[in-house]
Length: 127
Image 1 (cartoon, rainbow, N blue to C red):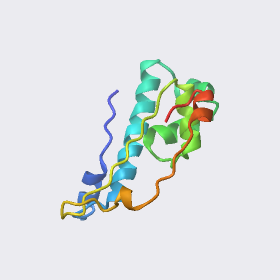
Image 2: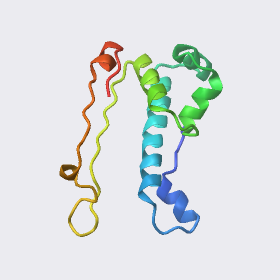
Image 3: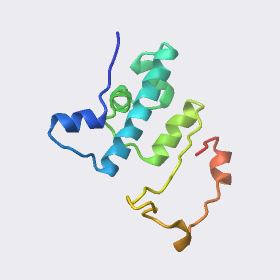
């Protein structure tokens, strides 16, 4: 059986919207990547949703929500799930251009907090 997920741009075009607000676009891109990764992982390991749910320590309806992108998962829960899948998460952040060739957010103009990731690494979760 083949599944096809639709991207946010095609859905919004069908609704008559010309431009996708960047926050919606980012959300759907992340949701799409997460849901397809989880689905592909389960298929690759030949697991039913029920078996996969048991492996993750959740109920089957949660696996369904994660696979179809119908769940706004918290960062903590995402890290928990990915750790159980022995999967590293990499998050890249980059400021958007304001259309005049300059970034909308000037990193140098603000103090950027640093985060210690030692505790995260002890748990076996990488971000």
